Image 1: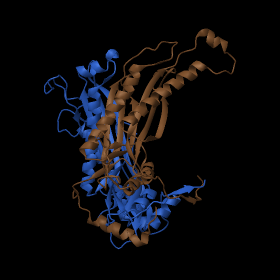
Image 2 (image 1 turned 30 degrees about the vertical axis):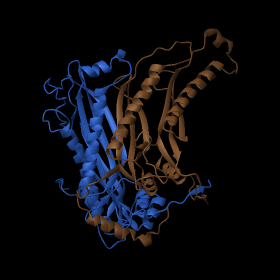
Image 3 (image 1 turned 45 degrees about the horizontal axis):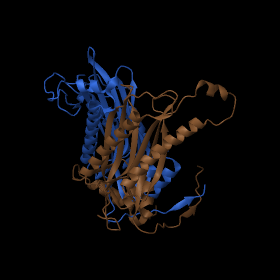
Image 4 (image 1 turned 60 degrees about the horizontal axis):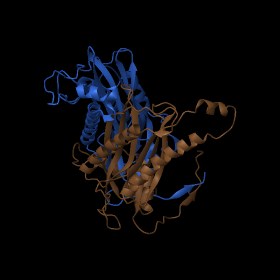
Length: 290
Length: 277
């Protein structure tokens, strides 16, 4: 077998796509209500599609908080550095760039498979990250490709993490999911005198302002990146499906600890296609007899 | 939901809209923390989501020694639990205020104890800021509450829809907290009821007291908002990390006011679901 150069799809995936495009049995990850809901809204399942990339993250960025004693505020505290800050010797910029690349490539390969079998979009996408040995990670995206019973074709394949039942509900209400969007940020902050004071045993009831600032900056940056991603797709808005925060401490120098926070936001961007001001759906109040 | 998909020409219009999309064209953009059901119901109730709003505070909870054999409130801890939540909530409200929101729906209030310090916890409030399509309520008031802050509600989108349908408007989330130390039994007391099925009046009383304190604090907050009542009240007890005899009793609910005198909703249709769950 010839070695694959990393462009397009891996040979086995290309072969599976060729088989699927040639006809034969289709596969899907849909539940029965989901399949019915989609079909009713004018979409047919085409097949199950996947995208994957194995990536080594060797360089996470210089693991320091950027603390030099210079640039500190007058009260001796130092600013939080997020991965979006353009600082060469601090922050986790390269690490976040590697995560962005991993997720984006997995989703892009999934979209290539979908478009190769004539689909218009992928619903119910799950994206995941698996840690393998030696700083290597696999990013995967898995979903069900669908095709619209329509004469117009979208310019690119749409994708959503929403379940097909949710997609059907949105469509009936005049909204179309467009892309799976995400924002990731890692922030680091030097533990200064105030932080150590506020976390000491006898501090009493007090907010630890430094840590609050750290997580607030990490989340704010992740949300900004999320919004920028939504804006870049051309959508009108997004619904967030999951928001995560992980914090840990590192020891950059002897007897000193700094804290790091990683914030993630995942969601689906939406566009509205019903023209009128009134919502086309009306809810029925009912009481299930179960 | 009812709507005829063929009448709406769903796939055609949806695909055309996708084909028309241009990157970066929209100037105002919303984000929301709602599920699809909630998103659609909030829209149907006449509200537009403006953005996900969030407030957070990492708090060092002080230390207080309870007398081993005495029922008592641990006021230092009660104050910490309340103050930290209030910080998170106020920050969330400030974000919503900046967006020009009328209210915040689907608020989640979480506490997470951090690994890097035994007395450190993150208090976080997350919700979706919304703006009403109609600038005033049906009875001519602002949607904001009497403190001119956006209303807050921890009700789900489904409950929010039902509340508005039934002619009520949320005013704000109200909460009360009480951290209580329940006395240990004295030796002779414990010896006296070995092998017996008896009530431990001391314990019963302690739990009553603690819950009462939490609930009355919540009610005071509702009175300050001039609420008619509080809906969706949850009365929770958290052990957190304080050991078996120290418990936080936490009452939380959404204070509401009437929008119209009658509160009738259409009689629900009875349905027989075909699913086995």
